[in-house]
Image (tube, rainbow, N blue to C red; front, side, top):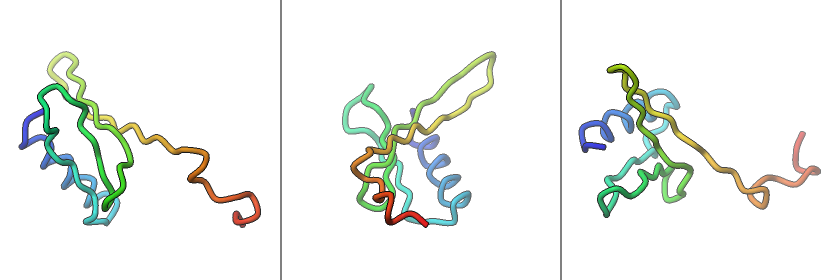
Length: 75
């Protein structure tokens, strides 16, 4: 993905979630996955899809079970 696309997706995420801590940096290596961060924490991977001229982006967020609150912490 180009820098302009990453910047637009980053701005979308910041506005949609009202949170300026979203960051979508340019990958260090060509062809590497585009990682999305919330502050210092990696939260997911961004994918680009083009079908019949329509471009869309999907953000896959992985949540590890060890990061979830315990059952007793949930209201």
